Image 1: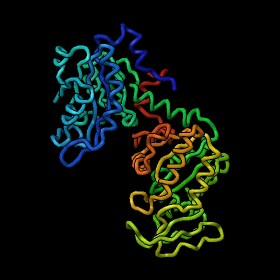
Image 2 (image 1 turned 180 degrees about the vertical axis):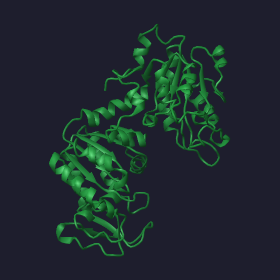
Image 3 (image 1 turned 30 degrees about the vertical axis):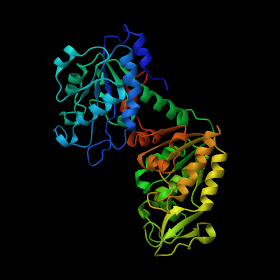
Length: 408
């Protein structure tokens, strides 16, 4: 992907030394009940960009949102102050915290200094991408660095609007994410396969419609597969399904055939009469000859072993795999079996150099963590909405601002 990168900022206009870089990061970090950070993945992902800027003589001012405060209103419970200590420890240098925007802070901000501004969503006009707010924030920097792909789908003042006023570049984390995503879908090694799971077709219609035009094969799992099975005449008992979307499911299947995209639906399913850990289960065939096998009081809660075997065979025939969403109700054993087995197989192929495997989405990351294979995949995106909208083929404001040919 042709984007403006940090090394270009260091090679132009006198370099980074003595400059102040305004950096949009994602410090929307999960916390424990005692207020400590329960998962510092997003903080750690910001470190390469922060360290690069400091090492090249720039001061760093960090912008981020946290939680969902009432737009334009402060909420002490959602302050970003808790990040300053862990970040200072991570970079082994002091980190200042700025409660309210005050341009005078620049007077004593020197090369290598790091400052975090308070939650951007406390600022009036942030979520509306107010041009006056964007201009006000831009006064704090000589350049803008977008390093939060997870916020790239939002046209907010701190993640897009500032770019109207400052030279703008992709941070190292952002660039790495965009490079891997482009490798997976824009310029992939073919054949390309995707696994898409999750609860509802309604939440992923745009995704499925976009993918069938770009993939060689698409495997559909999770609760959303039930709607497709229902559309093909299978009984699904009391399983989660969306009968009002049977026409849309049929249209997607037709579009896939027209585009030459193979659709892989479950050929067997794990059913139970109750959704609880350790529930009694049985495996039901989902072939054309067994359309009435799911009983009226049963739920489909996972794909079965034969389906997992089909998925493995499909991975063997693919060069690139994109994964979004679990195959079953993975949070509740034994309905995590198929997701974990398929994930481990994908990881094995990736380690062997036979597959490029890219995954993203909150549930997907949790499922891959449960399978203990996150580090084995080629790339795992922690971005939720942005990853999904990228897969849907939608423009992302935070990506457009760092793409060459767009205004800087």
